Structures are given as structure tokens and as C-alpha cells.
Amino acid sequence: MSEPVRVDSEIMPAQSHNGFIHPAAHVAAGAQIGAGCHIGPGCVVGPEAVLGQGVELIAHVVLDGRVTLGDGVKVYPFAAIGLPPQDLKYKGQPTGVSIGARSQIREHVTIHRGSTGGDGMTRIGADCLVMCVAHIGHDCRIGDNVILVNNVMLAGHVEIGDFAVVQGGAAIQQFVRIGRMAMVAGMSGVERNVLPYGRVKGFRAKHAGLNTIAMRRRLGLSKDQVVTVARAVHDLYRGGRPDEAVGSVAAAYPGNALVEEILAFTRNRGRHGLIPFGRYGDEEESGEAA
Image (spheres, rainbow, N blue to C red):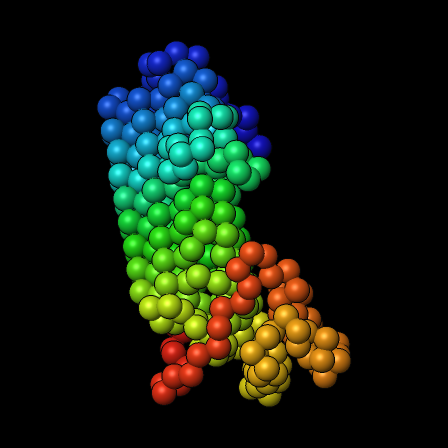
């Protein structure tokens, strides 16, 4: 693996270790630029930025503060990454942003650095797609292969598990946890935690079933296996107090790894607890994005 080039002056050559830096870009002294990076016109790369191999900043991208981009990350025009958090308690402490390999950050996305209320880092995993005008607030934890559709809004300290999908215009309250492979419908307001494999929707979002398309497509589960998990979730919610039903559900579905994952998530309820159960007339959504 090639070592990154550390910038020693404010002016860099247009060609650098098989990469390209446009003369209209500003790369500050101290930035570390990996082999094969492409930095387009109007980009501003701060002195603490670290770019892995093959990173592409198309144009007019801002990287401010301690921003680390993994190999192959692609950032589209007018995205701003690493600017200070929208937190009045923040007083300029050295916090940062980390984005995993091959993730794509589309136009006008904003991703804020961590705050002192967490461990100081906002983290996005590998192979994620963050679509236009989405906002990721300070101290968020985004897993691998997550899709955030246009105009999604994540408040501070939100956690999202691997392969989850948050559809357009959804808003997630601070400290909410979205489980692995869950799906949040567009325009939903999510105020409580969403179970792994759960599907939620509504202005004040409620549980609306399972993300069955993803469970079959990604996990290779049969219809009967999916139905078993759905019954376990129904039993969990049946009495209106999921946290109190964990023991009985565990006894009823011994050895089922997916049910155990859901129950472990329920036990770790955090400050918000689980999203409430809802009843809707329509059936399963297509889940094509999953």
C-alpha cells in the first residue's frame, strides 16, 4: 500500500503520485493525500484531513477539521464534511469525522464533526450511499452498506445498523437507534428505537412490520423463517410493554439467531425505548431499496 503524501506547503502541483489536484483547489499544508486521489476545482481540504487511496472530490467539496476518508470514497459537489457541530456546548475541541471505504456522499450533504458529548467522532461505515441534501449530525454512528435517501435528517448521536435504509425526508431524533437491516419510510418522524429488520412509517413513526424483502434477498431466508421472526416480534409487542416480554419471547423461540438479535436490541433500550406498534390498512411495501 502506498504511503499518503503529506502536503508541505499551501501550493501543490497539479499532478501528485498518480493523482490529480486541480489548480483551483486549495489543499492546506499538513493534509495527507493518498495515492491516486482526484481533487477537483473549488475544493477546500483542511490541514488535518486524511484521504485514503483513490478518493475523489469532484468539485467544491469542503473538508474541515479532522476528516478521514477511506479508500475509494467519492464526494460530490457542495458537500461539507467536518464542520463544527450544531451544539451550543461545543467550544472548538479537537473532534472529527471518519468515513469508510467506497462510500458515496452526494451533492449538498452536510456531515458534522463529533462533540464532547460522545467520543468526539462522527462515524460512517464502508459502502454507504448518502444521497443529496441529507444531514448527519454530530456523533452519529452509521454502519456499513447503509442508504440514506435525499433530505434525510439525522440529529446528534443517532445510531444506524448495517444495511438499513432511511427513505427520503425522514427525520430521526437524537439518540435514536435504528437496527440492522431496518427500513424507515419516507417522510417519517422517528422518535424511538427501531428494531433490527423492522419497518416503520408515519408522521410519528410506528412499527409497520418487517423489511421482508431485505430478509429474503440479503439473508436468503425462506418465507416460513420470515414468518417465524414476524410472530416473535408480534409476541414482543402484544402486551404493550416489549421490555417486559423479552423473557417469554426468548423462551418461546430458543436458538433463533434473528430473534435473539432483536431481543438483545430490546434489552439495550437506551433512553427512548422501542417505537410503538401501529396498525395500517396497506400491506408490505416493496422495499426495493433494500
